[in-house]
Length: 195
Image: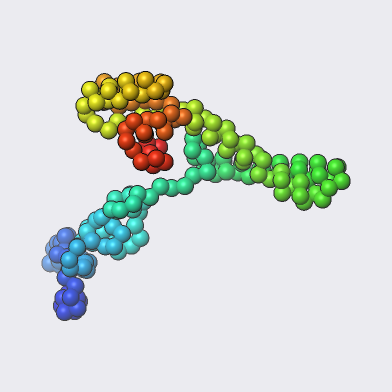
């Protein structure tokens, strides 16, 4: 098999493991890898150290290029199956209540159910965004304490409450002030390096 791969323009990795069982010797088959970059497309690991199977999340995070961020409905909470079930049951209860109210008012009941279904999720989203907006953010970009202190003084002149940490030179500020902080740091608008 190795000769066929070599003729096809594919080199094979040297076997990494040899098992010696008395008179028998077991040598695993070498895995093929591409000549050139030595990496599978979409992976930061060379093929000789990685199977050709699907990438794991940790491998996907190592890939060069644009970072992937998982989308979550809530910014301050991650729902497991219990939370998802509770949200679904509460939403269905809200839809049933909307159905009953619409039927009592003489409207078409399904319209009340349609309007009642997202009410719980919308209320939780509003509370989640409010908590995020009132929360604090920490950001450090240099090892120079003097530079961080100078930025903190400029932010103080602009009315931003900020605290400076000496151990690891960084700023802590309210998320609602992030536009002013980004402006002082010279960051592009709308693209903040903090989460």
